[in-house]
Image 1 (cartoon, rainbow, N blue to C red):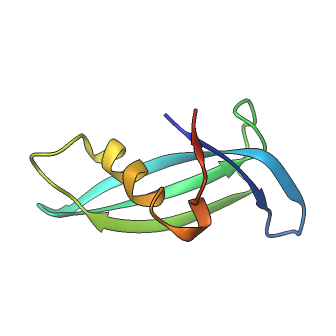
Image 2 (cartoon, rainbow, N blue to C red):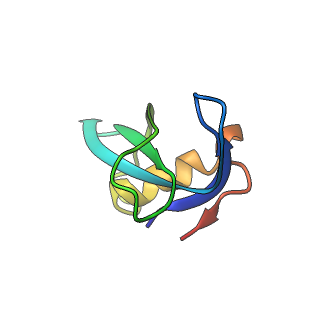
Length: 85
């Protein structure tokens, strides 16, 4: 799973349909996870142009931690309108 959304890179370039992937999910407590979201030019790129750290509540009875991380970032303004890919 990943997300696709056009963003402006930290260097000021528009990355059209950039590929955003959750990585490094860590269970911090029984109700919190930390994770990173790496952004790539496209799904075939091997080097991310940015990596941001996030955390969110985790529901032990819910979906797996990665699915919950994706659900969380889709609620954030910077990922508004992102498409699943």
